[in-house]
Structure formats: C-alpha cells, structure tokens
Amino acid sequence: MSKVKLHKISSQSFEHEADRKALEALRKTIGFDRLIRALMSITTDKIFGVITNSNYLKLGDRQCPSLYKLYLEVCDTLDMVPPPLYLANQPQMNAFTAGVEQPVIVVTSALVDGMKDKEIQAVLGHELGHWMAGHNLYRMVAASISGILVALGDIAYGLGPLLKLGIVPTLMYWYRCAELTADRAGLLAVQDLDTVLAVEMTLAAGAAGRFSKELDVAAFMEQAKQVAIDDDHWTNIQRALLEMELTHPWPVVRAREIEKWVKVGEYGRVLEGDYIRRAKDTVADGPHPREGETGIAAAAAEIAIGAALSRAYGVHVAPRIPEHALHLALGSFVEPLGPDERVMALYDDTFSGTGDRGVLLTSERVFASGAPKKGVRFAEVTKLDELAAGLLSRPGLQVNELELRFHTRDVRDAFKQAIKAASEVHRPPEATRA
Image (cartoon, rainbow, N blue to C red; front, side):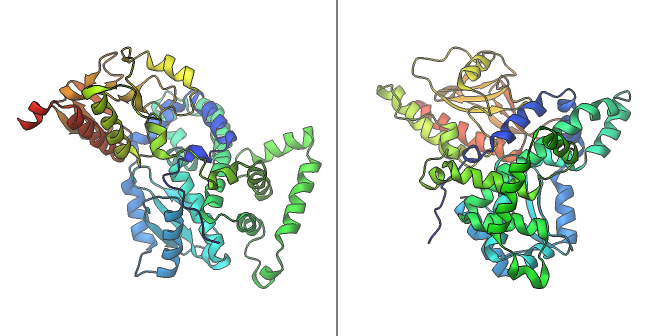
C-alpha cells in the first residue's frame, strides 16, 4: 500500500500536548531567556558543520545510495527539503539532529545495522520531526546545560546554581515530551504502527543479535499495558524521580503514547488530509472579502505572502497562543486593522512565546514591535535591505524605517520574499511602470 504524501504538513498537526504544555512552562522559568540568549551569542551552526564534515560520512546519491534513498522517501512523504544526512561509526544505536539554521541529521552504524529499512525510516522521520517542530535550539541547550550554566554563573554573579535549580528539571522534562512529538512524525513517515512499535522495542532490547527474529511486538505491548496497570500514585512519583535527568522517555512509555495517538483517531485524520498545513498556519482562510482594485491587490498579496512563507518553519500565526489572547497581544504593537485587513503571518521573536513582539504581516501592511503601532503599507515600501547578523544581533531586514529581526536567515529570507511580492502587488500601476 502506497504512503500518503503529507503536503506542507505543519508540526502543529502532530504536536504532542505534553510537549506544548512543557514548553509553555519552560518559557516561564526564571532565567530561561538569559540562558538562551547566552547560548545564541556563543554558538553557530558552523561548529556542527565542522564536526559532521570532519568526523562523519556524508551520504548522497554516490555515498551509500540505498540508505540515502530511504531518507529521500521520508523527506518526500513529509514534504521537506532534505537536510544533509551523515553516518557515524558508533557502537550505540542512536540518531540525532543538530544545528538551528542549517540542520544536519546523523545516524549511527549500530542503528542502521540493527534495524530494518522501514524502522530506519521511522527513526529518520523522528529526527525530521524535531527540526519541523523547532526543537533544535532548546535541545542544544539541554545537551550542554551543565557547561552553559557554569559559564553563565561566572558572568552572572554566581547565579549558575540558582538558575540550574529552576531550569534543569523543567528543561529535561520538556526534552522528554518533545520526543513524543517526534515519535508521531516517525509514524507519519512510515505510516505503519507496528514498525514504530518495533523501533521502541529494539531501543529497549538492542539489536538482540542472533535472537532478533524472536522479538515480538505483541508481547512488548502486553508488557506496556502491564506497566500501565501497575501505575499508582507512589509508583508515578518514583518514576518521575528516576526520569528527572533522562533525555528520553522509557521505550514502554513511548510505545503506549504512540499507540494511544492512533487509537483516538488523530493519526487517521491526518492521513485523510485533515491536518494543518504550513501555508495554512500563516494565510487567512477563504476569499478576500473586499471588492475592487484594493481588494484584488490584497487577495493577490495573501497568495504571494503564503507562497513565500510556506516553507518557513519558524513562522506561526499564533505559536501556542489561543486566538483571543493573540488578538490582545497584537494590540500592543499593531494599529487597528481595517475592516477587511487580515492577519497573514506573525513571527514571534521572543523566547516567551507571548505573541506581543516580533513581526506581523497583514494583507496590506508590515508591522514591527520595535516601532509600536506604526505599520508600513506594502504600496509605500521603497527600501528593503538585508541587515547582517552580529555577535549579539540576529539577521534582519530594513523596511523603510522599520527594523525587523529574525532568529534565522531562512526565516528572514522568507519574509523578504513575502514583503517584496506583496509590495509589487500593491504598488500602483504608474509606480510599477516608472
């Protein structure tokens, strides 16, 4: 049976509710903003590029083409541009994603030797899910939390231990919850529950060598159900204490969670086409209500903006913010919109995810929280220049008098294309001819 291609699927379609809630709690933790900003000021994707290119084997059409073909199939199913894929000579069954702007995916030799083709694809889909969901930056923090806090404590009057007390448990809990979201991406990549359950079983048992043919998924799931039956209040407390510094949930827990997602019907609805698309995250639904030349231009701008932003994974209308709360937040930096002016895209450039700062595109204007309640109409854009990133500044755009900043160059470039396209649509014919 052929797999369903999930055109422009957004990570919001498979985000685990525990991931969402844990991230909200993490962003509210005292010191988290300071920690993230410290990391961003000293870390670049070039470090990961040097490590992977120097130490691992880069796969492609000429290098391990059979394995690379499996990877391309997964990227096609999830409708993603393939990040570079590397193979590492390591004895542990593992895979990971690194990098924020320019991600790379690494799988180990032990993993590809110990798993079947579809199981490898489930793992690759899992790693792509981390990238799609924007997990990479926070996962980098978790991976090097101890060293960062030591450095941060030295420059923050010895606050490292205090920050660690609040941040570490919250961060590691989110890290484990993020794995549940990525597991769902793995399932969507292969679209076979038994394969994903077999991956969890193999992670629990290892490749099992000469006994691998005797591993039984059904027996593994019976074990998972028994663990659930044995759960009680004190057992859960003990489990929480044992898990506190783990990066991944226990395989039995992961297997139960992915099976539950299938049983409640959410997975099936995604395969039937009922899911959030990346473009739909940013584009107002339905035809533009205004008639006449202005309405035609606004509708055309919506199409142009949507096309430019459709692959910008960092763009969200409301990153985990209820719509009514979003409108309250937008009021802090946006003039009252016209009756038919529609919100097209919100880029929240804070780490708290409140939606009250950043960049906003409507069907007619661009706003920036750096210039409160002052929007530039697309028809009046005369300057659209790139702003380079510095040690403590992020890549940006200069739009007339507005300065827009973004976390990554990819998102900046997508917004540049969107603003340019919308400006060309709205520009009066005589201005275009001139």
